[in-house]
Image 1 (cartoon, rainbow, N blue to C red):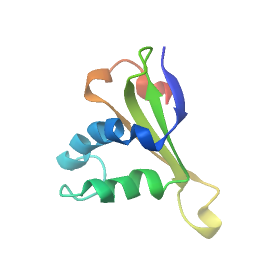
Image 2: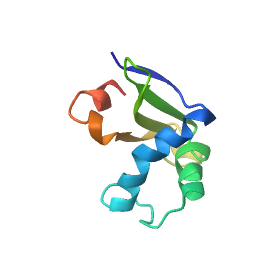
Image 3: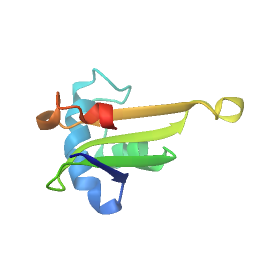
Image 4: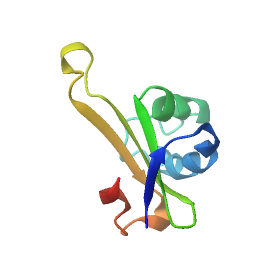
Length: 98
């Protein structure tokens, strides 16, 4: 069973392990493949309105997503989300649950 909860600062090492390979690949998100861990934290945690994690039945973090306004001002009512599922959890419905 997958549980969704708000990101806690203690989750960062596990979240970084999930998002770093995706950012480095440069195929999905518009971040530099040379993004620093600090820049990634700002992009994935600080800038969004909220960041969430998905945990499996053993409380392992298997995915993460953020929610933020798509645009500022008049476009702020439209949601933009970014999702990443850990490599070992892909194809198991985690993204659908998130």
